[in-house]
Amino acid sequence: MPPIIAGKNRRKVRFLSKPPPSSSTSNQNQPGVSRPTPSSSSSGKMTSQAPRPGIPVLFTQPPPIRDPLVTETVDLQDATLDKCLPFLKGIQSSQQGPFNACGVPALQRDDHVVYLFDSLEDYPPSFVILDASRPWMAYWGLAGLFLMGEDPTRFRERLISTLRPAQNSTGGFGGGRGQISHLAGSYAAVLALAIVGGEDAYSLIDRQSMWQWLGRLKQPDGGFRVCEGGEEDVRGAYCVMTIISLLDLPVELPPDSPARNAGLHKLTDGLAQYLSRCQTYEGGISGSPGVEAHGAYAYCALACLALIGPPEETIPRQVQHMNLPLLVNWLSARQYAPEGGFSGRTNKLVDGCYSHWVGGCWPLLQSALDGKPQGKGPPATTVGSLFSREGLARYILGCCQSHNGGLRDKPGKHADSYHTCYVLAGLSAMQHYHYRTDSSATTSEHFASAFSWRSTPIREGNVYEKSDRLEPLHPLYGIPYPRADEMRLWCEARPIAP
Ligand SMILES: [Zn+2]
Image (cartoon, rainbow, N blue to C red; front, side, top):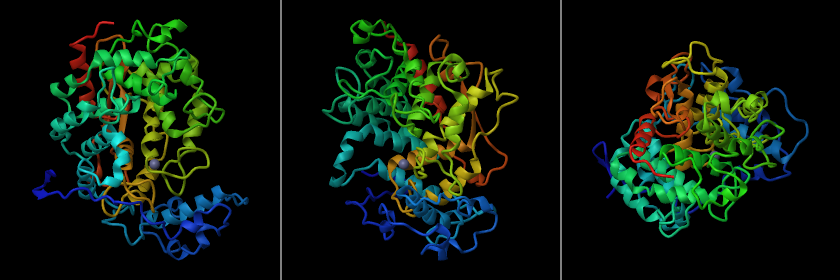
């Protein structure tokens, strides 16, 4: 039965049963087809309209400097600007108001909540590929609902019945029944269970076999494979540190871990050094040593370092891990104007999901730069905001809200669970100041820093309305702050012997 929200029966999914037709502008995205500048393009009629009052010119005009060399990349960027500018100016006919004095549209809260509830219902046959992503669909929906102020604990029993058959007796969760264990699915499953909380959810996880399985994924170079026989990358490292810290699994490698043959003794051995080798010449962080820097891998690597220990100790180069000035330089270059949102890589397009992957890096870097926490409240002095919170708010609220609910990559794209969750997570991260304190929920010697974070809403200089403020997520785990502490403490009371 569909759930009942606000007294109304919810219909089942509202997803398209087949891929959407090509947009009318698709020819503009063809490689090698040169285009005029955005301001004089065929859609220039729309972009030349005056913007709503209250919007700085930075967010209503194409950049003043253009690359004279016409390439596929330049064409795609111009096409994206053409699509975004009417939304940024608040003059796109499909945008819903009301618009505030800063020219920013309101968060369509009710529509997004309905979309998220629908996303946890049945799917049509054409979505069969999502059968391998059941833990993810649960996590995205539940985290999104929490961000919007809904109570996700009502899904506890359904979540447990969904995830029980996805857990393997050899440790870890697959994407669904009968599928091999994978770190991505296991990460999402643990987070989803943490969000709904409660003894029934926690006790579903076979922590002993999870630990044994993680030991088999540890590699001699310090990193982790994402599944047995699978690829090794920083996603694996971040997922393992998330899982062992929330579940209080032993840091020691299991006795039968193959990595012991390489002289390693702990799951954390060589890990920070492995992540350090993933920083590229640009300053960003790649999925594995020697490949291109990418925003989502940057978040995984930085969050992994901030899980291992205090970010002011584990992230900066002084401790041999990251070249911080170069990293800040690369991350800063991810935020574009006039769009205001983030891209994932150099010369790529703005995309709403990087509001989380890149936006989520900033609190971690800010904590590293603010230094050792001094007390239980926010530090007296900090480096301040490292990115344009206004720009991100304008991109998310202006460009990422789908007319029918849910959030998206950019105008012209359809909403989906993944983007809805991570665009909202980025909006929340932008609305709060996350900082570390000198006290932790755990007294354990391991991961104490991870449980010492707190947050406070940013009240000055906002371009969105108070009613559009979202709940804060833990900057390392992407779940409610109290739920992280509760899962950790429940597990600490039931230790697993190494
Ligand atoms: Zn995206």
